[in-house]
Length: 233
Image 1 (cartoon, helix red, strand yellow):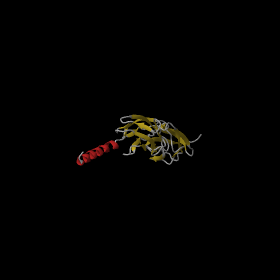
Image 2 (cartoon, one colour):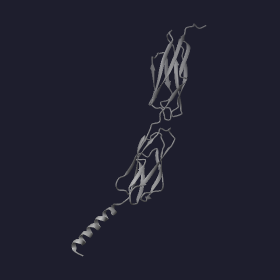
Image 3 (cartoon, helix red, strand yellow):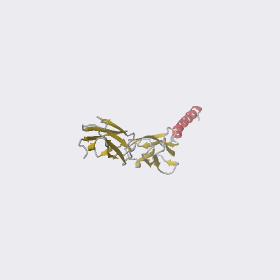
C-alpha cells in the first residue's frame, strides 16, 4: 500500500476512537429542585425523586448526602448503584421539620460521571403559627377601690408551627391593668396562659386594648373594667 494512503487510514482510525472512548454515563435528576410546603413539626413530607442515566455508557452512583443532615433523608437502593444507559431509579426524599432543621438545604449525588456533581436545591416554606385568645375580650365589671381582680385568658396555637418571641404591648393603656404571659413560646397545638389583673384607682371606667405579638403574627384583646363606687356595708 502506498505510504500516503496508509497515513490517511491511521489518522481516520485514531480520530474515530475519540468519541467512542469519551462515551460515558450522564447523571440527571427529576425534579431538578424541590419546593416543600409548610408542615407541622414532627410530621414528615415525602417527595419522589428520579435519577436517570442520559449518557451512552454506564455509570455508578456512589453516594448521596445533604449540606445539613438534620431533618432530611433519602431512601433508595443500596449503594454503589449501577445505571445502564437510559436506566433510571426512584428515590424517596423525606423532610421532617423541627427545631434546628433548616428551611433550605442541598442534596448532592456523587457518581463516576466526571462532568459535574449533581445537586438538588431544597426549599421549604415555614410553618405558620396562628394564636387565638379565648375569650376574645375581658370584662372585669365593678371592682372595689384598693382591691385587685384577676382573669385568665387561654392562648391557643392553632397553626402548624411554633409561636416564638411572644411580646405584650398595651394600646390606649390604663395603669390599672396588668398582663403577664406564662411562656415565651407556644408549640403547635399547644396552650399558654395570659393572666390579666385589674386594680382600679379612679372613678372613671377603664378600657384598654392589649396586643399580643409573635414572630409571624399578632392578636388583639379588649379589656375593660370600672371602680365600684358603692360604699361597703
